[in-house]
Length: 66
Image 1 (tube, one colour):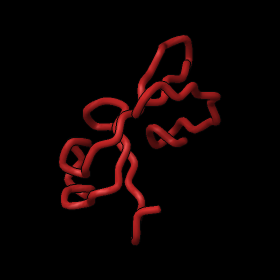
Image 2 (tube, rainbow, N blue to C red; image 1 turned 120 degrees about the vertical axis):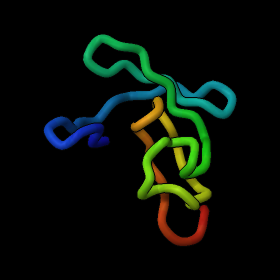
Image 3 (cartoon, helix red, strand yellow; image 1 turned 30 degrees about the horizontal axis):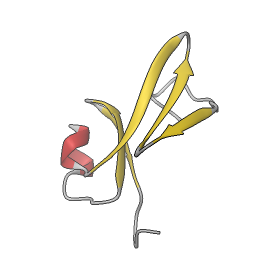
């Protein structure tokens, strides 16, 4: 996961329902399924298979979903 221009890493997560929680730098974060618009990132608007951590941090798949 790369969450900004300077930081990336791998984190163990725990699935609970449709979310995944993980600790990053001592902060509990939660990934949740969304669409690109919900990420609040203009370049992801219109995408449909996405995960959002918080506004301004999201990840979307290209192409077909699963």
